[in-house]
Image 1 (spheres, rainbow, N blue to C red):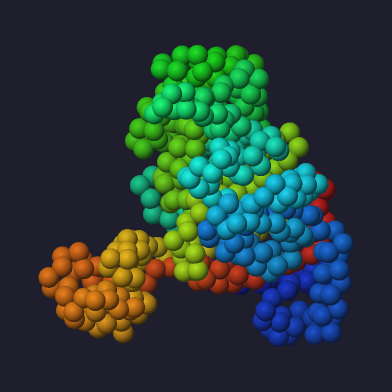
Image 2 (image 1 turned 135 degrees about the vertical axis):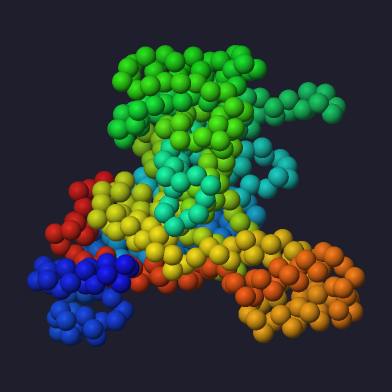
Length: 469
C-alpha cells in the first residue's frame, strides 16, 4: 500500500513539473523523468535563496537528555522538506552547567523577538541549591505561558489498550502547587503554598471554552479537588462554572481528580476537553500519554497572549537513552508540525504530520522489540553489567559471561547460580533475536515517505508562500 501511495505521489509530481520542483537524494531518476540536471540545480539554488529570504525565525532550546537528538531529527526533516524556518539555537541546562541569568535573558530575548519557540525538556534537579524556582518554571512565568495544551490522540499502528482516543488536556501552568513558595515554619515542618487566583482561573477556563468552540468540541470537564481544598480548588471550580454559563452550546461537567484518573483508564472515551490546575494537569498529561503509546508520541504546546512554545506533551528527559538511538521522535516531530501550522505553513505542516503517521501506520518500523528493550535496560544495572550489543552472535558471550561485554568478577557460567542473571540472559537472547526499533530506522523510513510525497514542492501547494504569522 505504501508503494502504491508513493507511485501515485511520483506520478502527480511529474505531471505538475512545469509548476513545481521535487528535490530528492535520488536526483538521477528525477532528472530522467522530470527535468535536466542543469535546470534542476539552478531551480534548487533559486529555491534555497527564496527560503532563506522568507524564513520564519524560531527559537530552539534542545534541553536535556534526548532533547538534542530529537531536535536533530526535527532539523533533518525540515532540511529535507525545505521548510522556510530558521532556527536560532540556544542552550539552557541546569544539569550541564549551562544555566545562568545571562543565558536565561538571552533565551527570553530571542523568544520575545521571534514569538515562537520549540523546546526540549529542561531537566529540573531535585537538589535544593538556594533557588526554589527552576529555570524552566522561570522561563514560563516570564513569558506568561499560562495555558499548556496536550492533544492526546491515538496513532494507527501503535497497539494500545484503547483505540481511537481523541481528547485534549488544558492545564494552567503559572500558579497552583508550582508557585515555588516553600519555607520551614518550624524545625522539621515545611509549608508549601498553593496559589489559586480568580484572574488566572477565569483566564484558563475561558481559554478552554474558546478552544472547544474553535475546534468544534462539545464538552469541557473541569478537574478539581474542591471536596478537600474547599477554598483553593473551590475558587477554581467556581470560576469554571461562571465561564461555562457564557457558552451554553458546550456541555460542562466537573470531576474530582482521583475519580478522573480512574475514569481515564476505564473509559477515556467519555472525555473531550479537560481543564485543570497545574499539578493535576501534569499528572493527567502523563497518564493520558500512556494510553496512546507513551511519552514519545504525544505533542504539546504552551501559549500566552503573545507567545507560543511547542514541546512534547509528556516532559521527560529520558537521560538513560542518550546516545543509544532508541528515543522515539514522533512527539517532537508532531509538535514541530503543529508549530508550522501556527506559522500558517499549512502545506508543510500537513505533509510532515501525514508522513510521520504513515510511517507508523504502515508498520515498517515495528514495536515488537520494545518490550525486550525495556527489560534489557532494566537488567542492565551496574550490579549485573550493561547489556550486550544486539545480534545473535552475542548470545554465546551472554552464556559465558553473564555480566556483559565489559566483564566482571563473576566466574564463567555463574548465571547458573544467580536467578536474576538467568532472567537477564533470557532477556538478552530475546533482545538479540528481536531487535528493538531505533530512531535511526524511524527517520530513514520517514525520509523515504517525505521524498515520495514530494514534500519539497514549491508553488501552488503553499510551499514557503505562507500567509504570514
